[in-house]
Image (cartoon, rainbow over all chains, first blue to last red; front, side, top):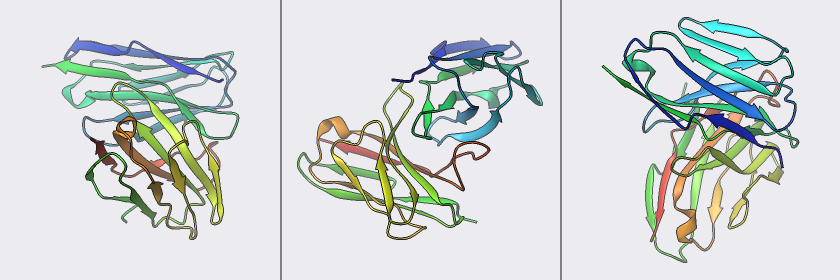
Amino acid sequence: GQQVMQIPQYQHVQEGEDFTTYCNSSTTLSNIQWYKQRPGGHPVFLIQLVKSGEVKKQKRLTFQFGEAKKNSSLHITATQTTDVGTYFCAGEGSQGNLIFGKGTKLSVKP
Amino acid sequence: NAGVTQTPKFRILKIGQSMTLQCTQDMNHNYMYWYRQDPGMGLKLIYYSVGAGITDKGEVPNGYNVSRSTTEDFPLRLELAAPSQTSVYFCASSPSRILNSPLHFGNGTRLTVT
């Protein structure tokens, strides 16, 4: 079946360092969504990418959608302690539902 | 605006017991979903509904049942609880299909089966 894979599973950074998580799909995606889940919280929608090669920015966060629409990345510049959490990518499955990656858990040391 | 509300927040069940996890949304969204999240894992879709009276299985439906009698409510039923159902359960809703339509999640129900 369709799979969405994320790497790395964990990332520990010093505050101020950059962070990147990568998402790869076994099939071409019509779109990809990114969510952030704070410890003990629920996933919160960050952004959706639809177009091949699309790049979107939200302050220190940069999201990219690959040209082949099979991969995506989230890059955080100069991490802060408020960035702590787990970042999930999710692609649309054949049933029209979202298939989530396992997430990348980010910890930031002050 | 309450959004998606789940009850209870926590529950401990004994093996073989049954319970219903409640989910209600006040955004008039047609689509509703139930996910489970196990430690270190992503979210697995249990069941979803595209509107009142319509439900369909997701990736991991075994051991669960749902109903959708109204647009607002989408309860999840566990009939014979098993330790493998220990997890955090999230209900979510969206106004339409995935494209251009992010999911709004509830705060989750943490269920332990012993």
